[in-house]
Length: 324
Image (cartoon, rainbow, N blue to C red; front, side, top):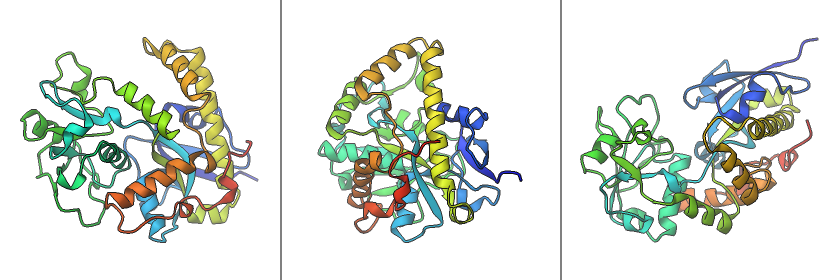
């Protein structure tokens, strides 16, 4: 009897390669990974059983009582956000606190990454209501993304006109800063007009880790409710497979570290600071991060009422990562 085929829409993160290539197998299932350039809308694609999903949109759905997606505490995209604030090369701004009252563009209002970045501004004493926000694409060629989340935007938040882009507005001086989880291609050139707001964002991020104990989660893996109902053992099995894929990837990167000039240094320094796993899976390992994110969604007005973190990952079987 053939194993059930589970189709997942995921972006091609390095740590998913062992699972996507078949090096990691999940007993009882045949997993097919459909590599995507952008995050899929899992619910609207009939060919998918699950895939990569915005943490913000998933939490908001759960808060609204929508359980059509079952989230796994496996954050395939996570990262510090201090690096995600861009200014012009000639800008006098050098700290988060200096953004009080500024004109700031961002790539999506309810987005997970931008929510975490706004949390940094709040912690630095910036009144978010005093900022003039402009929502739009980072570059003019970006299309097809929901940037407002289907809810009324707070006062002081406007949407960019068609054909405009954040990098153009920043370059022209009509914005003071831009929040973006992804960097414009120009930043990787010697003649870039832009730079990170923080000269040493790495030191700031290290301090954040020491204060909070977590690296912010941005996207997680979800499964459609009907797939879980048909195969109740699937969530735990897939979580174990994702963990094994991550472990295999890390082992190979430590062996084959010559893919960037200083990757080996990054790997050794990361291990000294974070231990063996800076992106742990499982509900228990992500409980504090999940609680903090739920609080930010409410504090920033992205969601209208407090969110109980317990509604996010209700399955006790996912508290820790099962053995594969």
